Image 1 (cartoon, rainbow, N blue to C red):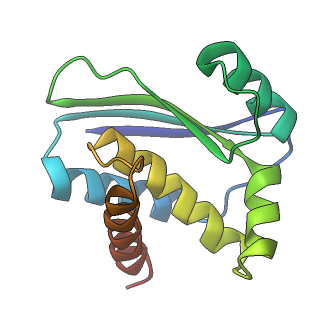
Image 2: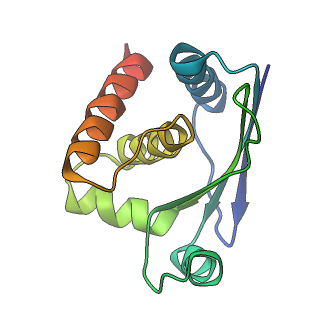
Length: 142
């Protein structure tokens, strides 16, 4: 059973196709790991809000598009707060010349993939992460 929620902090943002996105995320999680309990809160926020979280909890004084807090305590559970900067997603969509919603979906699934054990610290890990993101995005649009 999946409980996937969306909320805003410090921004006014309306996520289009919430139901389709929830089903897509649940499908990816069940396909990858067959988790029994899914509790994910996506919190859409501003650069300044996420920057403060980055400094306070991760001791990083930099802007980022996403921070994923994994609260899962056993292998049957996915429990997380995923903070996404709408400002950063907008900037990145311009930089990468991609539609805003496509960039947002990539960032959202990136956070979910971290919860499923995918890493992105090394070049090889980043390549595998990107491949998996692309596979997941194809499932959304397929």
